[in-house]
Image (cartoon, rainbow, N blue to C red; front, side):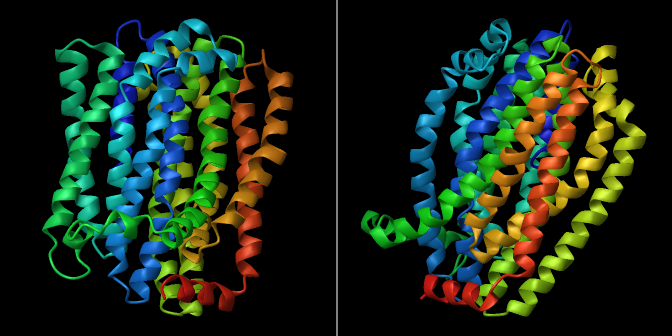
Length: 438
């Protein structure tokens, strides 16, 4: 539900009259924004460790401190990221993209600036709500925002005539609805350890930013940020930049936007399993149940693979229909449909990598995930991408070859995660959790 509105956005822009350049520009601006947002998202991911481990250890009194600390830290982090959107055209031009497209992409990214902060606050509330047992309510409220997305797109794009920039305003609007709906729900959950206790009483600034608590949060947040960014930058920024360097950049950027959209929807499925995994693993570790945590990881991986099998079959059978739904250009549709054959393979290692990343966060071992992501995406994936880009720059296989490099990268990372978790010292993991919640 959280990502489906973006699918509506892409379809809305893709079917505007004479939309190929606007579609490519919105994809460029959205991917630049996502690369910035990944940093803020990473700073909320410390809660994937802190919240469930505190819940498992029976320390619900720590929820308010963790949540309020996260709100302040994410706000500070988002300020420079917001300023970065204002110079996105210069950054993208420096990275070799078409200056005309970059000039169109910057206004789109600027209109997403409010979403940067609001999405950060929503994600904090989401993490806390899930850890505190409100997962169903969080999903239901997210659906409300999803249902409102087509209305906002109709208002800003069609009725107000704002074109592709209206899609950016609509994106910000439905995120605001999501955040306030969840904030109101959490505030109404009264009682010790319930939602209202995240806000009332407000913790003194000296407690929120005590040196020990601040350091503990950042020790988890910084590796979590790197873990997310290493993959998101390679996927959102790296593949997009490489697609813009292929022959006919408008065509390849448009087709890559379609493929990335489908990949992101798939990733949202794995991200849901990842969140459940990190919460369950963290709760079991907080309660000292190592065997239960290991069993949870095995079940989660199997769930991810079963989901990947269904998704892969759907992509193979429906790739032409999906491409036609997201863009009206026959050339973009054909190229995107070809690249989606590689995506049908990609979903298997991607599901495993995402789920095991959640397990590492639940264990408090995000730093290991950073090492595995770096090995997969930058020691193997990036060099392979450059090699394939050089080999197939003017070839119809060019875009698909970039996604083939992504498949190799994510497979390497997932295998490293699997080997590490299978050999982990669980007594040490539980001891660290006890010290964290003492």
